[in-house]
Every structure is written in C-alpha cells, then in structure tokens.
Length: 219
Image (cartoon, rainbow, N blue to C red; front, side, top):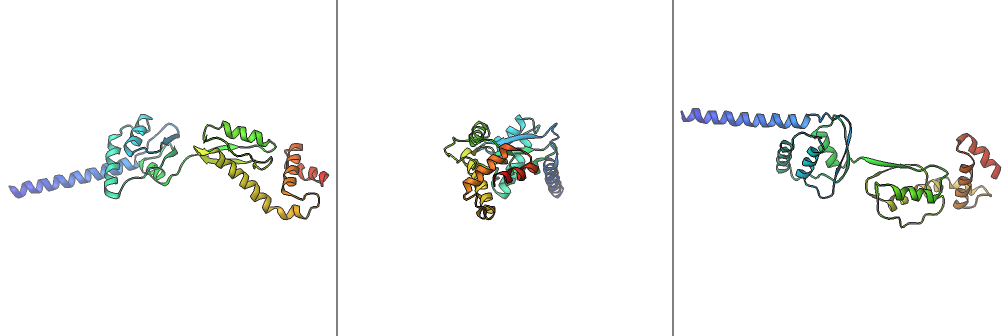
C-alpha cells in the first residue's frame, strides 16, 4: 500500500507539472484580443509586478496574478527580467510572448514630428518647443537654414537639443555630399550661400518641376 501511495503521489506530481506547463503555454500564446492597438508606457524603475498590474488596470489583460507568477518563475529560472522603460505599441492580437520580447528588446513606439520646407528656423524651434513628447529646454541657437526640413521619428522624452543636433547634422551631411556641385559654381562660394539660395528657391515654389527653372534665373 505504501508503494501504491508513492505511485499516486508521483502521478499527481507529474500531472501538476504537466498542468502548469500547459498553463504557461496557454498564457504565453493567448492573444489579448483588444478592440484597437494601444500605446503602453513603462516608467523608469518600474518592477515586473507593477508593470503587470498596470497592464491589468488598463484592461490589456484580465488577471494579473497568473502573469506575475509566470514571470516570477521565469525570472527565478533564467535570471531577472529586464523590461526597459519607454512607450510600446501593443497590437490588438499581441500576446505575453510578443509583448515580453518588445519590453526586453526595447522595441519602443516612435513619435514623429514633421518640418515643412520653406519655414524659418524660428518656426521650427517653436514646433520643437511645443511638442509634448520631447523633453528639456532648447539651449542651442542654430543658424538660419541649418535645420533640415523632414519627418523625424524619436522616442518619447528625447531631449529637444538632441533633435536639433540631428537636424543640423543632416543639413551638414547633405551640404558636404553636394559640395563638389557648388564649389565649381562661381556664384555660390560657401555653404551659407547655398542655403540662402535654396531658401529663396523654396519660397518661390514648392514644386520640384519648377525649382531648376527658378534656380537658373539666379545663377
């Protein structure tokens, strides 16, 4: 009878382990089934428990405890989980496995800001200053024409000065790439003159087809 009891205990233990493994697989692969994509933010210093509870409070998951237990077990078996701070896009059919991958790989959601050609540096700086997704004060004073108009993608809380530096670097890089074109043109002797000419042409027309015609009038 002792052997029979041991056998029953052994079978019960095996069944419990199999049930637990089945539960893990189910929770990992179960889609959240959201009505729409959502942006979820992890703040600096958040623990795994607080992140899971936040997911529940925002109705992304229904129950927090099973996920907390699952992640705690994984953490004990394979080391601490490093969920990085930032904004993340949770797709309607994401699951814990895909979400955990985003959190660990820092696959963050990128905000964007668009600068239109023909606007002044002061207008660009006002747009940067007003963006709620950038951080810090503007301490740089870029020259007129040195902020390249384009669409820029950035992580939330990127420093405003850092974005300005990216815009300046893009302008400088493009000017260097095309330096051979204006060095042989006697009417344009410096990068500043190229920027001024580009600004004049842009204010005259917004159409690519007309730019070469207008530029021919000046040089």
